[in-house]
Image (cartoon, rainbow, N blue to C red; front, side, top):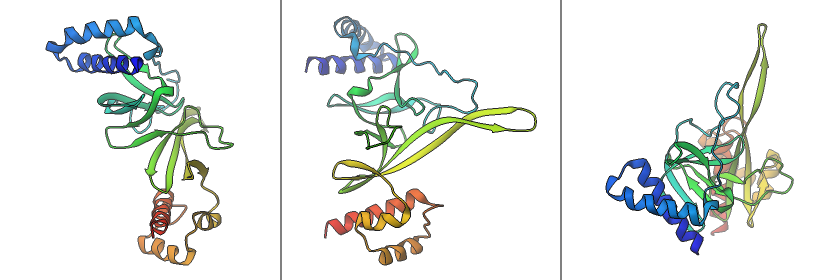
Length: 235
């Protein structure tokens, strides 16, 4: 509980520094210094440095820009916090006003984040056999009796040309159903309908009506199936 209160003061101090609230700055500066002195492990001590600058593109989800979002950590929810999600190493980043640098937040304490555009990333347990789990953040698409989540990551892509070797980032997405509290990789198309226990013929009529195909509209396709499965479970 003491650590939670210390974390609360630490976050407030950061926000105050960033937005220049001069009246409160002196008080928050004092609190910030006390927090660092009493409990320095709240800040992981790691300043983030982008290591792969030789690659074209960037290692972040969606954008290179850090913008305000919401953070749930150790049971407390903080809004208007500078956040950025780095999907190469699966890191949640914020900004240290003291050192004027990006810092790595302690992933073990984070429950979820909401980015500025409303995108939610939730901490989940590792799916069986999934080697790219890393720190365990998954994008929440559907939350319900059956959930739908996506793991985003970036890897190095190499393309050869006649003149030179081009190195760049490539984003990879992996979809999971959440059933009975466990993430299950989305199987082959023919196995999805029995897994979700939905009628294939009726569901395909809905998919055709919406113009959705598994290969071309994978996320929307899966989202429709999960919503239909949840509607069935409520009857």
